[in-house]
Image (cartoon, rainbow, N blue to C red; front, side, top):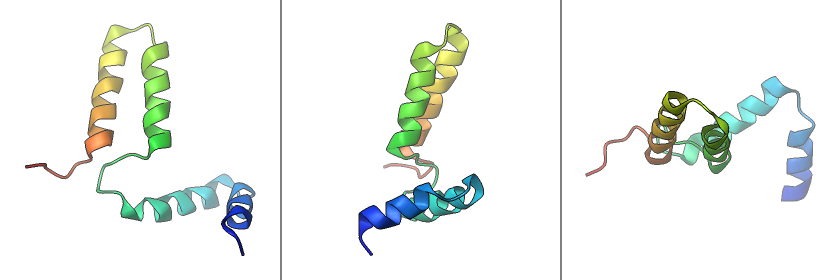
Length: 73
């Protein structure tokens, strides 16, 4: 089975099963780190909001999601 076939099968899964696949794929990410797709979605929300407080909150969430929850030296 090719990667394209696997992706095609994943795209056909119900939302609950897709979430299980996403969690499995995220195993290689440090704890708390977000995927590029998740960071992009937060960025879109941040630039489209009119509320400065919400924009700041989303920015902070993006920073945490970029670096993860593992302390850096």
